[in-house]
Length: 444
Image (cartoon, rainbow, N blue to C red; front, side, top):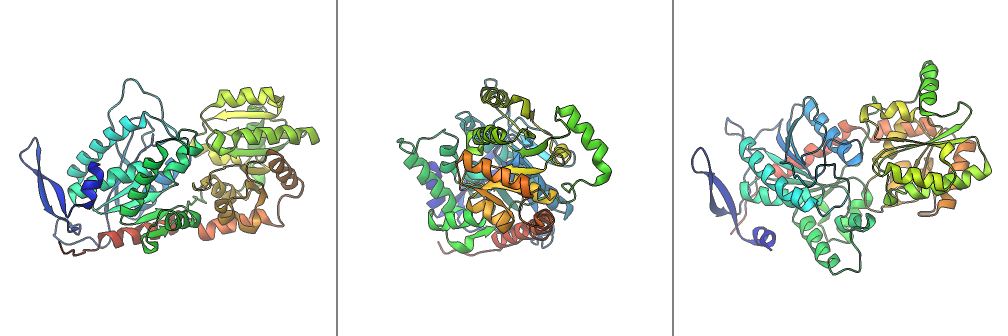
């Protein structure tokens, strides 16, 4: 309720310095203010950016990777980046990170939907507010809907422009994670909250064209306020293995328990039902009924023990290796063991950054036939019917036999280099900052 009031009133709340220890609240007209430098002019080349990351940043999976790579490329271009995030996560050299206080009853990492995130997000709001008061950023760059809600409130209080980095539908993600029942009494209010956040964000960056269409068609967002900035890949960090690496690759296979004669299917990402992990293991069991020279290298977390138990139940433990969490810096060396990569994600609204890692590696890639997979892979992918383990098994067997479409490995890497680099993403991000930071007048 208070959120809606803050959004719709014709005046903003503003925190103004009272003394060295506190702030008082004042009302002022709802007229956006252009960020200014110490010289009193709006910076045309560099920005002070406050990123809101409602996750355990940095963790070794897609959402955190997007936040990290955006921060890195913006810093390389001379911009000042601060990330506000949850208490847990890896600190990173050269990146300013502000964390929430810890919660005694919830010390471990948060991945996906959780009721405990309500408490985390309340703490994150105050962390963001105090960081913004100290830093006085030019722009708030908020990730995910929780971050956008916090960014809208803090932006209104301090008259700061906001860019919302949309990474999937809030309610669809909750449904995918089985945290929210579409038939429950909570679905409608949460859907309306999601629509309110989407429609009040001054500018939205989406990770796919499909996500932009979703925002415009289902949530009523004005098309000019939505820019597509797809997930990208550092092609200098992810590249195909050369012949000179063969001894190291053989040694790595030996350490992981992968016999040298086996073809390897690689998966890198979170382990969860909505990521298709259970379907991948079911497909693996069907594939091993047809040929035994296969191995499945499954890299990621959480729920490793659960999926190891499922592999044992399916009788495929001897042909599967679960590595657990793979540090981001080591992901390329493990992907280099693969003959074929798989992306069985089921979500229709979230991005799938792992596909771009596969593309940069030049790996033939099998995915469920979703709009996001098609957007990245085009005619170079091998597709399975969404949610169908048998179809996934046949698509993987086909890719293993013929290596995917002719010349697909080199073409996939070329596409990654041409269309999905972080330098290209930075141009779109800076275009978004320029648009929201332009001075605008408003009649009260």
